[in-house]
Image 1 (spheres, helix red, strand yellow):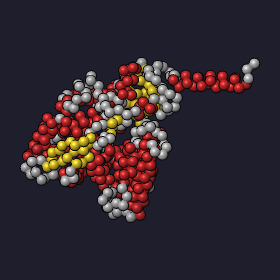
Image 2 (cartoon, rainbow, N blue to C red; image 1 turned 120 degrees about the vertical axis):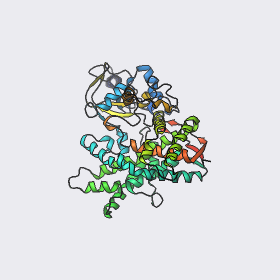
Image 3 (spheres, rainbow, N blue to C red; image 1 turned 45 degrees about the horizontal axis):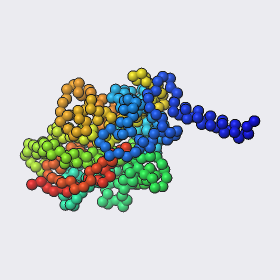
Image 4 (spheres, rainbow, N blue to C red; image 1 turned 60 degrees about the horizontal axis):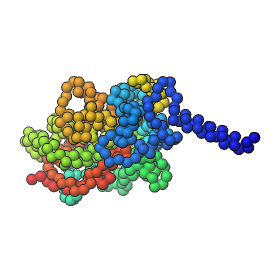
Length: 475
């Protein structure tokens, strides 16, 4: 007879082995895509968050594509995930929003952005918030905002030209944040006693990092930055309530009106999370794209030459170099829009777009179980040589073709701004800011790269050393 302790140990070992087997071989009413679930609870999170300095498809995804194919299973931060690098599956996921799939992010993301942020809401509430945002970022509002964007760009560039060496990433982030914060909440960084953007800088540093909430980690700093920013926004909302303005002057006034309506569905928590997301999304991604665009133009003098010719022609046609841009001028920037598309295709600022399967879904012989997360991987499509010739080359002219077939394929093959009904509502605002800034830059200034410009992905895009240039007026 063995001692009772031996039986207990044997039972525990059997239970542990059974648990490990179940973890590595999830149950499914069909055939799961191939792949590895990694370590229990941790999954393959460490590999996913590992750093790389490539413009190519992230090593985590590329290695598994080569091993398993375009659709594979994994586990990230304890959650089973189907990763899709297949354009057809990506299209299905976006088009079946609310039917087969719905927007979803890991719990760590909702802790960062708020549990009632616009990305986590569905149905009527999502459409309601989307319509609210379009009041600020819709085409009619952007036409009126064009002059403000141009003035901000000109003022910033003039100041940079007198400062010597400027970090484009930091400088454009400040420029865009100040403009957006003014439109959203009438925030003025020069007169405010508290630095709102500093809270967002702390927030950004840990946004896409391993979710370990321990002092000293990037994730802990990220949560701390969110708390600071939310405290400032809540104080501003309370001050606005106590001293309401007679005329609606910014988006905060509009939100306050909505909160005060008797039949409103808006809550203070949703309103504050919305403000937080809008402030973050409006400046961080655009400043990254502008930094990369400036670097790519520096590295490709022919593109820069033709960009200058396009924008000089716009000014010449106006006949007055000092008159501001019109909406018609903006719409004439053909090559500029091609440069923007090519920049964001290469930038792949968002490494993954998450959805959750609402029902069991069959795709090309595989089964996606209900409740599993699906991560659409834009870089894998944007850098696929079968869809983009020499995909790592900066070639704005690849966007010249506009046949019907190519436009239809473009919906599947270009996801820099999302897709389906959750296509980013700030896309037009981003394009306006980029196009107007580039117009002011190439028509009035020249620049020399000084240092930096190296990229780092963790897996989100970063410029760890910035991109420092010396700006001077054109002859």
